[in-house]
Length: 150
Image (tube, rainbow, N blue to C red):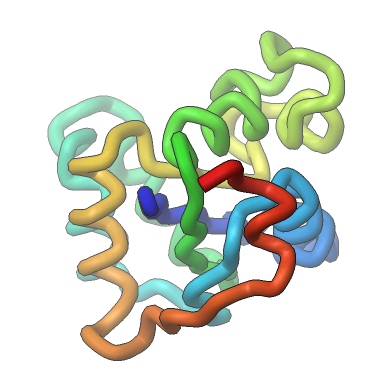
């Protein structure tokens, strides 16, 4: 099965949306295999957003993501990277479709509730940044045959 990294950002945690975000993904059929609440330090934030280093918004992005606790998680399932991105909605909440997480709860691009990996390679990198070996749990769910044909 594919895996992706998802993070409920400080605004989502402060607004009490962690459970709602997890519920949406679980109801879609994705399996939660890792979850932690943490306060990201500057070093981890800079490594996480390395691709944006040198861009005008980099410092503000790092300042924001370190401003409060986040909920980091790993989801597992078929096509999980692309499906999670679709469920989150466009980065700019004003352009996010109604019913998506950002379309429902987001107002401002700088406070858009949730982050999700944009590719399988990014997912592997981000999972490695936030979770140590052994923190991802392997388990069978009784409902999997009702979600996947094989």
